[in-house]
Picture 1 (cartoon, rainbow, N blue to C red):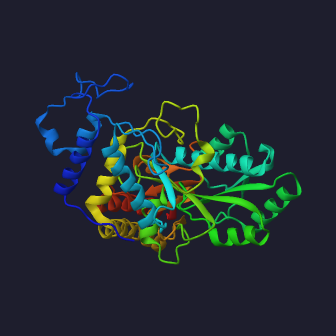
Picture 2: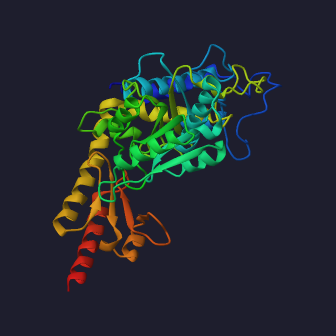
Picture 3: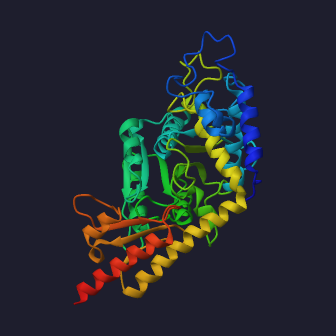
Length: 415
């Protein structure tokens, strides 16, 4: 897992070089593109600071990265310079973080993990329909009860059925017996094809699904399935902090796709989800009606901001792989500090040791204290858990203040 760290000067040079290769709305004879630079009455392109602001310059230039630039030979060439930076970003994510072989994958910068998850299920639904003449009511999506709401949303949009698995309330692991029984029951009913959603960090708890046990059972029964990993939260931290053997890579033949978000751990602007999938699957969602788009469109969103892709590329390059590993371990250390205190005080919580989420049982914290520190409940109506996420803005001083107040609450309870 290695990609080179660039100096800010080199990053700036590469971004401006990429912009120079794009079609320029201000200097070229452009009559046919239904787009332009950002509104000049609000966004000034001649501001002096822009010469040192590659992301803002890209934002104002407003490149459209419609389509998927890792797929096929034809692409819209109006914005080929910044598209090349997106291709390099996808290469870093696929090959360096998730150990894919060169040229064995496709990917693009989506609007977020929700879109990337829906894209995966859309592809696999169409794969089963096209390759096996499957009926939609023969396809089932299998996912845990802690899974992100984007999966039920996808079921509704794609008109396919779901099988929700129970999780252990203490370990937050999928109850394997429940998984086996529900899959066997589904096979005895009408289901023949399965889409498996595996979490590489759930949103509320940071729990990681046991991918090896689940796939071993599926393979033992020779079940026809495709497996998607929802790494929207964990994708940019778990591979760098995982202490045990990491099965969440493209070296795992059971995995077909990943979703990861840049606008969580990477501190990129919202709208920077990333979708990665093995080669030869995007064709199942080709929108042939998009004849005016060179190379066609394989994405859910269609037009998308090239500036967001450039921003994520910049962030990964300013840190390099080793710098990023150090940064993520710093978050883990601060999270562990919180957990050590909770252990000392006998406060019940859940935490995956490789992630920066601590979820405290509502029995041990008042709603007023949770509200003061903006802890997120699992339900706003009747919360059973409150979540702490140790992000870069969560400094040690904030943690200390919270822990002092939490300890004082515990003293009052004991009295």
